[in-house]
Amino acid sequence: MVSILIVSHSKKIADGTKELAEQMKQKDVEIRAVGGTAEGEIGTDPDAINAALEEINKEDGVIILADLGSAVMSVNMVMDWLDEDVRKRVVLADAPIVEGAVFAAVESGLGNSISDILSSIESLDIIKKN
Amino acid sequence: MTEKIKDIFIKISDVIIENKKYLTKLDSAIGDGDHGINMSRGFKKVKEKLSSNNYENNSDLVKTVAMTLISTIGGAAGPLYGTAFLNVSKVIPDSDFDIDSAIEIGESAVNGIQKRGKAEQGEKTMLDAIMPSVESLRESKEKGLELKDALEECKKTAEEGMNATMPMQATKGRASYLGERSKGHQDPGATSSYLIIKTVVDEIN
Image 1: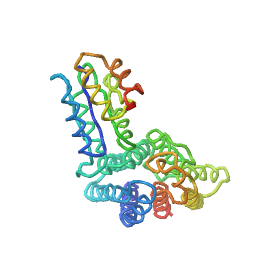
Image 2: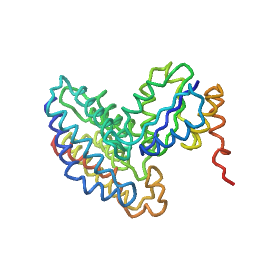
Image 3: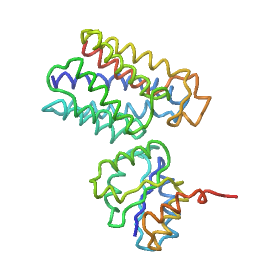
Image 4: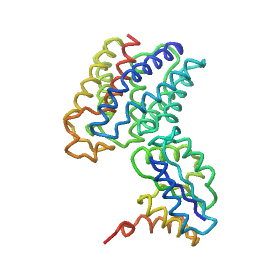
């Protein structure tokens, strides 16, 4: 199963998105949420991202959903710290954080691969409301 | 030499902490208003760490600065300045440095910031203060200027670069969401970069 890491500036957004995604997931999909600074304020904590990634990075890899600027930048930086072989199976998705996490949880639960999940959640259809 | 570099970073920390309100005010106009708070939190920790530890060489010292900023800033400035200083830690010499090492330090910082932020000059970011100042060092070298004069020129160019962000429209970061309305405000990132460059130059000269 592909694991899912949710990174937001806000702990509430990260935790809430995880909660939403977990309603849909099969039980062995690992989902982690990281939000806010180490002091609990709005922002990002690269050390927490790194720790969460280490915990859930198994053989099928990890899809990361992130919200804005420094969350994206911090994720990229942490990914650069990974060993080459580990780095290969970790992807930051070009997808909206909430829709992306929910769909990724469903698809991962169905046993789909990272590339299959990405092609679903990176599609523009995912954000269509009308 | 390592004591000197430590003093410079402690001075930078003091300057950033002193300017917490000013940087936050600039960021409130076009961003999320946390640049001063984040930077002063990061540099407070840097000051604490450096004051209570000894370092064998400049590289270890600057690496500590970088990792501390990455862990504590909490905004985009963390990965940006963190990666810049991480790069600097790889090239900073232990001997007295000359204009060539100043250029190498400047270029490595720019590379680090561009790697993370993917910005170019003219996008209303910290690079608008840093890139012209590194360019001025290269020009000063060609003109055969003494290090002291080259550094003064570098500081002056950084200040001009910071001022030049005022009319620019932001195309990177939170300020870019404002589009045209980002014009007419000095960029907080370029301002903190200028303050760092100014402090380094004033401490060396």
